[in-house]
Length: 270
Image (cartoon, rainbow, N blue to C red; front, side, top):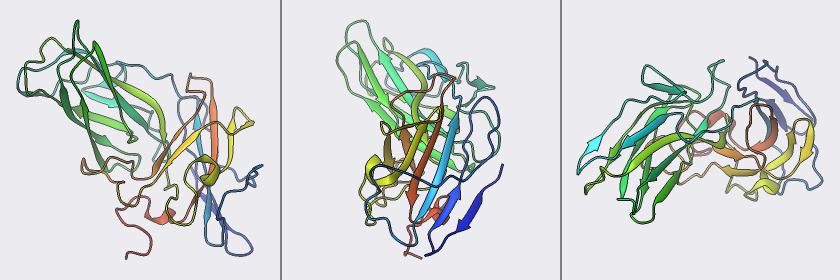
């Protein structure tokens, strides 16, 4: 796996980053970003980055944890036993090295009549091997409730389930989602409009130009690895056509501070 940085006239850097899933190994390559709508606020010193996700399997509701009864006024940590898990550890995207991306986690709780409120913590590691955790919760009522995670996990090592009341009639399953983690911070709040038009220079689906995905960028006030933060440390990308094992995503996006992608710092803060 390789990363390539090229300094262009005016100081604008292009950095190609590959993030690969199941299937062929695709080498990083540089393409001049193109877009019918230029990114707002493009200026000297920004980095244009390429993130690729190739042939990712379709998400499944229970491939991390299969049907598990909720707890009764306590906290449980069931052994992860879905199809992605081996030895109680679930690998969301196979390990080809650090530049291979992550996915969000989805918790679904069902009940024959009305879900009893439950919560917990998802713990694992990100693409750089750093411990990452996300608090999850669903409220009471209706027969089915879903928590859709916002952080990208490379590996999930545990999921706790906590109930203040008797939730033993709840059924909890945990699976992976369709939000894909970015290897480097997507800029936000630094003179660049948030969202796909403001951040993306080019989006490709199976070598066809599209503009239908959604970037959730790095949030300087709410991105972090602990449960104190609810946003991903680098940002995520949600394709309109979700992974099905045959799709290749290429996304060029902007970053002000890629060098801080594996730290808790914000550019200019030391």
